[in-house]
Each structure stands twice: as C-alpha cells, then as structure tokens.
Length: 365
Image (cartoon, rainbow, N blue to C red):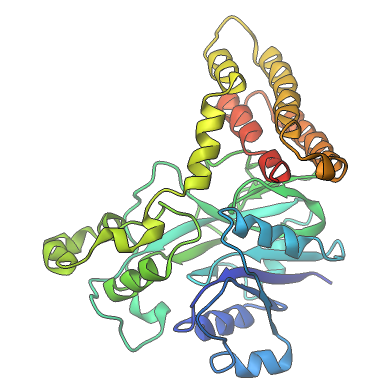
C-alpha cells in the first residue's frame, strides 16, 4: 500500500498552518511531520485535534545552521521506511495541486518505477492586498504571479528509500537505479527544469499580502538573501505604485535574513577561489574534448573535492566523517555516470552536481 507523508520545517506559521494541514489531509496525505525551528510559541491551539490524533507530529529543531532545511529532510529520511513510503518535502505556503487524481497516493503510484516526482511551482502574489484578509489563503490569492526566474523551481515528492542525499531543498541525488522525474517523466539532473503544470503542480503562495510579507521578513527566512523588500514587487508589479507608501519608514537592515548568509558566502568564496573550481570552469569551455572525456575528468575532480574537505576534518571526527564522505562520493559518482551525454546543458549539469555534493557539511568541526 502506497503511503505519502509530508515533512516541513516551520517557524511562526501559526496564522495559516491549520488550513495547510487540513488541505494535505484532504488529498490523502498519511501524516505530517513539522520540524519547529524555534517558533515564538507552540501550535497546541491551532493544531489541537491533529496533535491529539497523532496525524501531526512536531519535532523541535534548534539550530541556525544555513543548511538546516536539508538537514531536516535527511533526518526524516533516516527513519526505517518501506519501499512504498513516499514524502512530499514542501513548505507551509506550498499546496500540492492534483489535476487528474483525488488522492496523492494515486498520483505517485503512476511513477512507481521512479525515485521521486518533481512538481513545478506556480507562484501566487498578493492579489493587490496590502493587509492580511480574514479568509483562507487559497481563496484570498487566486491570481498567478509573473515568472520572475529564468529557471523554474520545483519541490519533490520522494520515495524515501531511493534518496541518496539532498543536493538542495528542491531535489536530491537518487540511488537504486531510479530517477527523479517531472510529471512528463523527464529526468531531473539539475535546476534547469521546464515549468510543467499538467497532472500535478504546487501552488506557492510566495508573498501573500504586504502585511504577511513584512511579518515574514521580520521573523526571518531559512535561506538568507532569498527574500528582500524588492522581491515582493517583483511578484506583484501591479502594486509598484504603492512601493514608496508601503516602504516608508522601513529599515531594510532590521530584516536580518534579507542579507546574504555569511557562512554560505564564506563557503562560496572558498570554492570559487579553489583550483578545483577553476579547472572545472575552464574544462567546461574546452571544445576539443568529448563530453565522455569531460565526464571522466569531472569524476576525478569529485574525488579531489572530497579529499579537500576531508583534510579539514578534526582528527577526533575523521573516521566517522570519512566514512560518510566516501558514501557520498560513491553515490555521486554513480549519479554522474548516469547522466546521459545528450542532456541539455550536460557540462553545466555535471559541474553543478559536483559542487552540490555536501562534503562541506561533513567537514565542519
């Protein structure tokens, strides 16, 4: 019997959490696990009946690590699962929309030979609302927002036993010979995924009202630098005339997570200054070597990349972390070798896959 769960990391999502849980229950989600990242208070009032029945489980997740969302996904995956167990890793402002099915298990059963299903985002803005309306999210915001990114993002429903590791909060490196695919069965190897709204997709209420958006900036975002004041108007160009009025008196510096995360910036600087990055960047532009030769070279660089991080591990953690790094290495090599040579942007895909392998996390003191 196919079972589909939902897992999410949350922080002060009290206003709309009941609607979101109720919706997931309505499409047949088996249960919801919420990782509470230090909300200002509990959810006993909003989710009383769901907590009592056990449909919702809340786990405390006390950390400010910039990679904590991926850590949550891995933590959920480390439990003992059956091959029929799947999980949608989404946020409380994301609603899975089924166009041909009433039950989410019926959807994933059509992809039973796959490791996971990547569902495209359809973003929704504020519908011109400045103040938070007294009505459900799904009724308050009905106009799709313009596409403001060149590459369309997605979230994944993963067969839990087929996840090797999460390369981002959107997708993962699979194992067991299966693939992460879109609803039209196109394999997903990178973030360059076409927007597909057939069969199923995710309604992402990315801003909600201006009042909601400012409250979100105040409470902080998991990934620093992703949402800023101007982000609201990118998704709501119809409210640009109100920009000066709405932002009067706001100090962008009070919204700490609108700034780029220092830890991530430091990692990026270290990577961009490394010999490995320059060799990969240079080789990707060389025309007189075949893609097959390029792929072989990149596998060797992945080994070097792993060794670079292992050298930073303190002696007391070396044995444990080394085992994990070698496990990551084996799985990522298998993934690189599985990428078809005719994949669009093949060389970009291979390089991106290498740089997203999470050796850095294993190497931290």
